[in-house]
Amino acid sequence: MSKILVVDDDVDLTQVVKTKLAADGHDVIGINTGDGAFELAKKSKPDIALLDVMLPGITGYQICRRFRKDPELYSMGVLLLTALGEEPEVLHGLEQGADDYLSKPFRLEALSEKVTSLQKLLDSVKQRSPISNLPGTEAVKRELNHRLARDTQIAVCYIDVLGFKAYCASRGKDSQVPLVQSIAKLIHGLIRNVGFYETYLAHLGGAHFAVVLSIEDYERFCSNLMDAFDQQTHQIYTQEEIEKGCILTKNKNGLLAEYPLMALSIGVSHNKHRKFKSANKVFEVLTQVRQLAQPNGKSSVFVDRRHIDR
Image 1 (cartoon, rainbow, N blue to C red):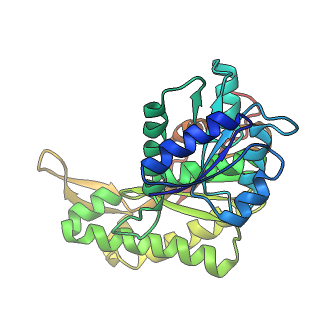
Image 2: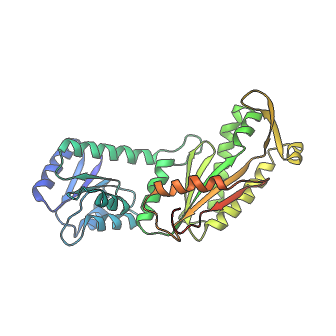
């Protein structure tokens, strides 16, 4: 079960919520003012915070943003309790870094369901790929949402290995796992050895990876990664394949066909020129731009430089 902090100026409601969540097996503490909520969180290190939006003096939105900017608290789950249940207010709360919301008045069972759902989310972002030992899609999206809520200037690189399936088909299915592991090791080693700080690396499945990093670093990162990948992959092909620039393997119809050597297709999106409200929007843009990075004998990158959507 979880340690939960309840921040609400309604004393009676706070007590009811504490009683219910304690009966569900949680360790619950409460405070009836926004002032002091951050300090109590720093002291108690809760897993989840329930924040009333309309607090005197300081709003739940402001407390949430402060949580997300703190290195010890930014990963906690945040559930907003709000009487402002209209879509603009809900979206605004999520943009401040909240994970979910619950409209007042609410049923206690609905509260329990929200907390359980948030627990599952927190558990999921802690999971690692059994192949790469890296966090997955939900984890990187949550990390991205937190950085956006802190108004950090960031770039996100979506890395796709083109030619991966053809290579594995030519070498046999047992080649897939070692190849994914070697690619993950290459990216992680580059981040560590070249000095890309405050970087978040995730494995999205298959031969797809995402890297969140400072906007000042993405050009240098992509350049280094493409050079390192192209050099490393040439070592696993035969001399004949390198000279031809392709491999010969069976297609889905069982006929021999030529396929290009592996190369990286990297799509980059950043918030230098426009404000992203959520990780989902960033990934929507990445889906578009990574298709524009078309390798021609070597790895390629395409950067979205639009100031507005079009």
